[in-house]
Amino acid sequence: MWQSLFMKEWLKLRWYFTAAFLVHLGAALKILLDIRQIILMEHGEMVWYQAIHLHTLFYGPLRYLPLITGLVLAAAQFMPEVSGRRMRISLHLPMDQNRMLFLCLLAGLFHLGVLAVLDLLLTAAILLWYFPHELALASLPTLLPWINAGFIAYLGAVHLLLEPSWPRRVFYALVFTALSSLHFAGSGYGWLTPALPFFLLLSPLALLGVLDTGRRFRQGGVS
Amino acid sequence: MTLNPLSRWAARILAVIAIFFILPALFDKIWTRKSEAPLVFFSPVQKAFVYQKSLGGHQFIYADERGREFDRGAFEDLLPFVYFRNYELRNEGPLELEGRIFDRETIRSQRQSFEIKARDLKGSRPQIALYPLFNNDPGIAMIPFPEDVFRFTEKGMEFINADTNRKDEALSKRFTESLKEKGFTFPATLISGNPTNLKPFDEGYFVKDSQGGVFHIRRVMDQPDIRKTGIPADMGILDIAVSENQRREFYGILITERGGLFLIAWDSYELIPLPSDGFDPRRMDVKLLVNPLYRTLILTGEDRVHATVMDTEYQPLKSFTLPFSQTGSGLAGNVKDFLFPFTLSLESPWQNQASLQLQKGSFWSFGGIVLAMILYLIFLRRKGPFYRNVGEFGFLMLTGLFGLLPLLFVRKN
Image (cartoon, rainbow over all chains, first blue to last red; front, side, top):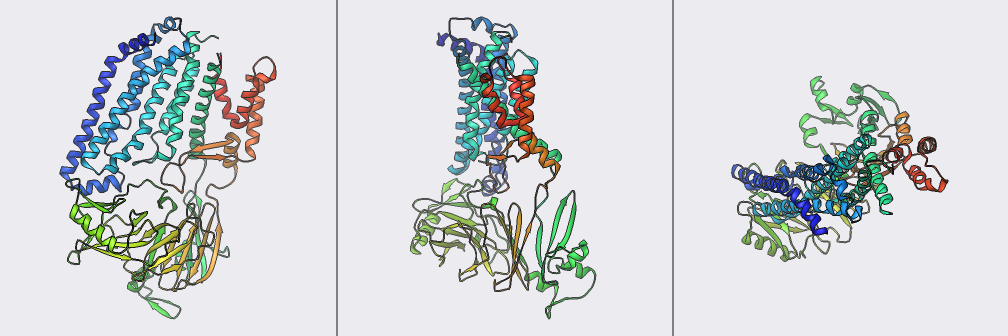
C-alpha cells in the first residue's frame, strides 16, 4: 500500500517539485554567474581572500531557499487534504494512521531531500571550479543548517495545516518560526558547525511531533 | 497508542527549545544593560593604575586603583602617552616624565598596543587553512597581494594559483625542499600570521611542524626565507598572534595551552615570559600596552580585569585586579532568573563560532518554578490520580513558568 501512497503524494507534488527543482537550478546558475562575474571584474586572489579570510559567502542565494521550498511543498501536499478535509478519508484506510501520516511526511521530506542534495552538489561543483577544494568542503556544514531549516519549516507548516484549533496554530507558528530562525544565526562559513548535531536532532523531533497533531486532525480537534 | 504521548512530548521539547532560546534573548534586549569591561591603564604620572568603568547608557566613571574618582579631563591627563594629542592642543610643550622629555615623535615611535581576543584564537573560530604568503620585495613600497595561496599537506607546502586554480608546482617544490632542508616535518600543526596587507610590512608566518618545532616562513623576492626558531617543541603552543609593528621589538605573542604568555623577541626568537598567573586562554582576552617607560599586560575575563605593569625589560613592578559585572545585578537579573530557570543561546563572548550554551538560573528560579506548579495545579491538572500528572509536574520543575505554555498548547484534547 505504501507504493500507492507514495504515488498519491507524487501526483500532488510533481508540478510544485518540478517548479522548485527549476528554481533551485536557477539559484545555482545565479551563484555560478555571480562568481564568474566577480572573478572577471576583480583579481582572482582578492576574491579568494574575500571567501577565505573575510568569510564572504558566494552561495548566499541558497540561504532561505530550502525554507521557502519546505513551506511550498508542505502547502502543496497538505492544503488539498485539509481544505476538503479529504485526509480524514485517507486516515480511515486500513492502515495505522500514524504510519500513514509518517509515510506522507517521508514522501515530502524525500522531495525536499532531493533538492537539498542538488543544492549541495551543485554548490560544491561550482566552488571546486573556481576555488580550492577546502572552500567546497566548507560549504557543506554551512549549507546543512539552511537545509535543516527547510525540513523544520516543512514539518512546522504541516503542523499548522493539520492543527484544528486556532490558538494552537498560532503557538506552533511561533515555535516553528523561532526554531527555523535559529538556523540562520551567525555569518560566514561554518559558524554553526559546532552546534550542527543539536540542529540535526530537531528534525526527527519535529517529525515525531506532527503525529499527534495528525490524530487531532482526524478527530476534528475533539478527543 | 504509545506513539501519540511521545509525539506530544516531542512537540513540547521543541517548544521549550524555541521558548528558552528566543524569550531570554528578547528579555535581555529590552531590560538587560550589558556594559563593556573596564579599561585599565597604568598612569606614569601617578604611578598607579587608573580605569574607566562603564555604568551603561554612555555613563562612565574614571577612578584610580584606590577608588578615587575624577573627571574625564583629569583621567586623560594621567595618561599622557595615550592622550598625548591633548598636550599638543594645549600647547604645553613636550612632556616631561621621570626626568626625560618626550616629544610627539618619540611617543609615536615607542608606543604599541596589541590585543588578542580569546574568540580569535585557533579552534575558537572557523578558518579555512589557506593563506596568502606576501612577497617581500624591497623595491616595492606597498605589499601587493600574491596571486596564490598556500596550504600545508602531509607531504609538503603547496601553492595554488588563483588565476588557474591549480597548484604552482615550481613554487611548491621550492618551499617544500627548503623546509625539508631546515628540518621541517610535515604536516604543519599550526599556521599563524596576518593574512592581510593592511600592515606596515610583512613578517610571513610562524608554522609549527608535526614534531612541535616552530619555523618562521617568509617569501623574499619570491624565494623561501625559512628560519627554524629555537622555541621549545614541548611548550604545548595553543596559538601565536603575530603583529608587524615598526618598533620591531617582538614578532608577536605565543600562548600556551596552559595559559603561558611569551613574547617572541625580534631576530633572536627568544621567549620573554609575561606575568600570566591565572590566565585562561579560552576565556580571557589579552592586551599589551607599550609606551616609552612601561609595559602593561591586561588580562580581561568574565568578571575581572587583571593588569600588571612591567619595566621596559618586562620585569613585573606592580599588579591590580578590578572586579566587575557585565550585566549588573539588581531587579532585571532576578526577574529573568524567576522567569527562566535556564536559558539557551548559541553565542559565547569567547568564541567566534556557535557554541551551544545552557545557563542555569539562580535561587530566584525556584520562585518561578513554585508559582508555575501552583498555576498548574489550579488550571491544568488532569483529572484522576496524581501519578498521571507526574511527567508534566517534573517538566515544570525544569522549565518553570514558561513550561506552562507547551503544557497548555500541546495536550491530548
